[in-house]
Length: 184
Image (cartoon, rainbow, N blue to C red):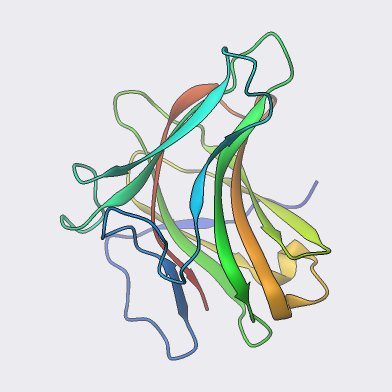
């Protein structure tokens, strides 16, 4: 298993660098994301009603008091093996001159949220993953170096995925908010 990324609690995002690509700020409250890609929740086993993931725009829980964030409600508390999450298309983004994935995350104050989840990056032929640890009920800036995904060809990134797993999620059901997804 790869090492766990260090996350830094912060209250504001700085200005984007010239090479940064804003993937999704969710402020419009509608699809597509900022690079024209679709997104949504997914389930390992849609026939298993005891586990699920759902996505919704939240205008109540926002990082800077305006726009919207993405609210991901998950449940991996199932008698069967369970995992689910949220996917986002990246439009074959050329990330060869980029160094990191950056986004903001926050657990729900009432429902709770796992401190640990997996982030995957995919191309047509490769998939890499990295575990984020330490998410709290405060907005937290998550920074993951692209090298950690061990993808050899970053010229056509296709998808970013957040995964909740039954064996790593504590609690096994909760709500995660994400906002301002950037590759820079």
